[in-house]
Image (cartoon, rainbow, N blue to C red; front, side, top):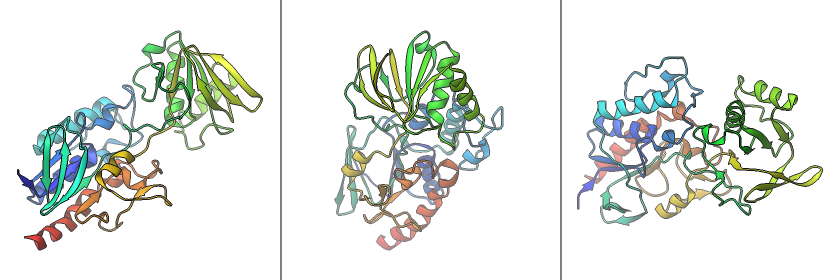
Length: 325
């Protein structure tokens, strides 16, 4: 069995950046991605526009040219395909990692396509494809969606949007403009204050005029086939409903961390435990990179401020591997 210098778990932008840094360092590596290339970005809504400008999303000295200041999902997917091609990155797609175990020479990673062995590992799995759950009866019904793609399925349908941050407001507005009857269930007493500046006044005006019905200080108690039960300040109510779009955020994949044996700081936003200078975990030569390093504080780290993780890790790893040689 081939023993790599490095295995990178996750083929998102930061995983690709780690692959580029490994290429520059002359390391024998492979990137294992459970789904498609940049799987998290692929799961973004089809009409999504990034908050960041294209230059802040660049990796590997490959220019990101977009039609407007802020690129779209489609442009981002094309860009990272070009990065992959330009650097001839070694990526195994549709290869989820099931477990990781220590070996004499490093680590053995189990996948459905066989075992991979490596002297070192970088975990850079993002969080967008692991949605938070409501954990209520009926959440497993087919009408409940934790990912949003297009407004088309919701034309002339009664839609409940759960949440009040960027994704929820975006979805509520887009489905409303395409002909859905939209209701929002919002835990707090207001729209999230840090919602994008061009979205917040729009959603607030639609609520104020009554085009979109919003229940504040409200939680969803139960989802039924043709209705939902809400706990509101005025008591429990049941409203007719065709679809529930639970736009309440995403988390790192803690089940994967458990299978890999990565320790998590339960007292500090469930961050994976790591050295902030080297990004190494308590497991020797196992590192964490990208947005997962902020744990549940998913609004702290992004592509633009974690691109540096690749060079930080590879600089430290080269020294570690030289000592093993």
